[in-house]
Image 1: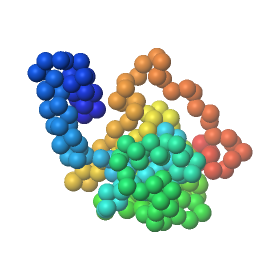
Image 2 (image 1 turned 30 degrees about the horizontal axis):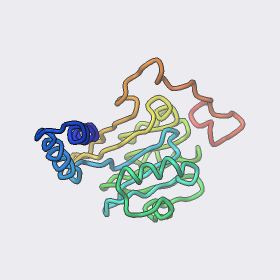
Image 3 (image 1 turned 90 degrees about the vertical axis):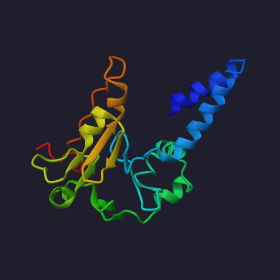
Image 4 (image 1 turned 135 degrees about the horizontal axis):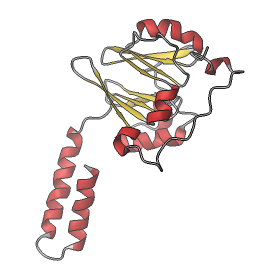
Length: 202
């Protein structure tokens, strides 16, 4: 869609004949189609610590936005959101405690594990598990798991929950392809002295 709109503007600006009307038509068509484009139900930042979910009202709500405010503001701008980043980060869409957060998106339980202690329950009950930590071996109950290594390898994730309950995932790495200049840097492995970062490494 962005490419079509860009081409439309070029046609309108560069051509001096009646062909420039084609540019106007493409711009109008792009504007008409924009509201019909499907938007992600869940967005996961490149470090898996910024997570945003789309509520029934169509608006995004987030956890981890304080540490990644710039990235979240760009998400909101791209989404055409009506609420500010501050409002979205204070939403009650997530229920959080000392070890993680939970939310429901299209009837599916989304768990955000922020401490190793959260995995025991989240791996059993969540349909979608997201964590900036390394998920432990045997965490197979969730339909979808996006953890530290998934985010490092694939970058920002966009999750779409389909009508049949399946989850479709789009990532930055898949969209741009793996090229020598776009390969992710080697990750800094979780610090062994930090118990929050050692889940699944034992």
